Image 1 (cartoon, rainbow, N blue to C red):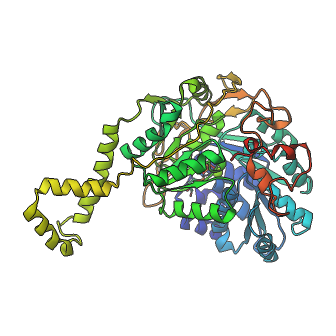
Image 2 (cartoon, protein in one colour):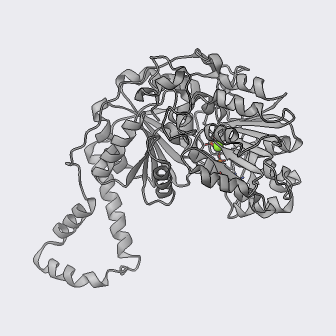
Length: 553
Ligand SMILES: Nc1ncnc2c1ncn2[C@@H]1O[C@H](COP(=O)(O)OP(=O)(O)OP(=O)(O)O)[C@@H](O)[C@H]1O
Ligand SMILES: [Mg+2]
């Protein structure tokens, strides 16, 4: 564990860190910041939610002179939401130095971005497609870039951004520093690193295998496909989340599911790649400010998103890969908080679940589908709490104006009957509202060679936290005092596995057996030439994008 003052950072940067509420560096920050400051290339791996953004953000802002008026730093992220979020954190870190950063992503008015570029930002945070658009329009030049960060690099490859990343990096001077960060390090990352990084330092802060404390409790429920929706409603009723993210496999699935939840009275909305960027931004805003409690999303929300207060992640559909599972559930249990992850597994998918368990070395505990009685009880508990809250601690609250009618009603009716009727109304039960979901096929397990002993072939970073925050076990055990946000614990071994179809660094080939295939953002992010999905490319892959199945997040 280190103090931020140990790194010899400027006062302006230290002030920004303290304003963010960070007291001590997390383990990945402790290890990565000095290396990144030294100018070396680096591969950084640490669990979800442990502060990787600041681990590269702090050295980035430290290295840039306030007087600089060229683009000297380029950060690439796989999704638009992540570009926005990382840009916000970097903006905050560079604020007192007066640095300027700009997010560049598809779906946003390019004119607005061009105006932003006139402010001469030193740091650009973008998705590869739109970055290339700007490069081609000559609105962005990369000749002066000294540092490149690839956040969630494996995901960018999976989304089909390899060619774009290569084209972009070719335009960045070879004399540069390249940093690559992710929570998971599948095999294709090694390949990318070999190509683009020079003698990188590997920093890996991942916990030892453990069956004990974890900040994320993980459960699965075996359920028939047609029972999933009712099961989900029962789960949400039994264990009402503060905020929950529910992952569905495809855009259609997410659209149907979010609509169905709304019909049943849940404060939900959907996030997927068929929405306009304005709609996507609006949904994220509502989720961040708590006006919706349930975000239903495709894997577009699986990576990097940091929303505080997410208590539950629910895999309505299992993800294709163990990495995806790790990233999805990592949307909860962040920055020292606890979280719960549930996964629905159809009978035919149980092998796939066990594959995920084996690779990630998570313990995912089987639970029964909540019963209707448990759901009702959970819901009633919440209503009872709301009633008591309205009553106020002194028994007064703001209820005085209602007392007259309450007394009148009580003269005519039994008090228990009356209160029961009030609870029934508050429950707003809409379980008779008819909803329809198109059934999904079970996911097909694409088992890969798995080597649980760990090793050089791309160590897999599990999410399991051996010591949790404030742990005294494990290197990097950390205990935060005071009012700041506290840190992290645990470090250790890892397993590894290697992909079978990893040629060209893409683990998800476009073959017909893969119902995920190339993902939406890779098409959309360049979409300034008419906004269509296929405009950007005329190579053979474009044709596939006509098929919804290949463009589904
Ligand atoms: N030193 C720190 N002390 C307390 N909180 C921190 C610290 N550093 C970062 N955080 C907070 O931890 C949360 C997670 O950080 P971040 O999003 O960078 O995680 P990450 O490791 O990139 O996760 P993911 O793998 O999901 O992308 C954020 O809310 C961030 O503000
Ligand atoms: Mg991150």
